[in-house]
Length: 362
Image (cartoon, rainbow, N blue to C red):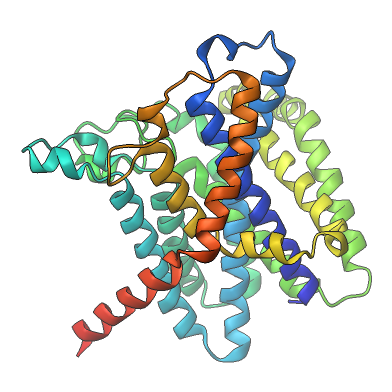
């Protein structure tokens, strides 16, 4: 992939992680009376916040899939798949660690909330699935591309079937990846659908990025398809329902958040890729490369992971809007500063995990 495209990816990742941080800060600390749709500012904030996770999952699928495909050309595919599996399990482990109620364990209490699946576990499992799918498709980029596109479409189209899924007979450590019944928000379905679409987009960059008119074509394509998904996907689904009489199409059309959010993501991709020459700033790129460290640090500060004392416990939902906005800016600055200068979560965890695996192999 070209250097420009890498700038584009890091910029989108930076945007997604900063949006996630401010979203968590304001959602955790804003006074309850201001959470009202009669306030235009709150409506806009809530809508833009809803774009964050789809963007993060899609860009994660894009960059990981591209690196996997690229590794085949370099003759390092086995090493890349091995590294991807390690990273996937590492993310799952960190996700659980951040929710570990250590002090409650010391008192003999073992709450089920520890098993709730969050962003990191979902992304970790998604990376593992991508590795297995790529191996199963015999490392053929075209087959991988088609499979990822069909997977994304299928997961989105079947959403009504698993919307209220409950698996009482399945152990919670597994059922939480599929069901929201126990408090999990980021289940592997539908969120792997965004990762799958990201994988499909990666194959487009891999195949066509060096062509002269690719940038114009992909920016235009992202924007047009994005607008179509936001404003026309529900109508299209209803037309398909009238033709096929498949009730599931009607259900998807009436609760069409997945395709509309994908439309939002594609528009963000188009704007960032179009403006990449203006966003190739070292600070932006560095933020995009430090997403795991930033996520871990912000989780500890807000929710009191490991310590039990965070902004959630100390302040609660008590801030006025202006306080929440100023606080969010300061919070973003502090978290990024700590990540840049005092933490190396990615490297530290990965290297130590690799050492453990090497010792086991010996």
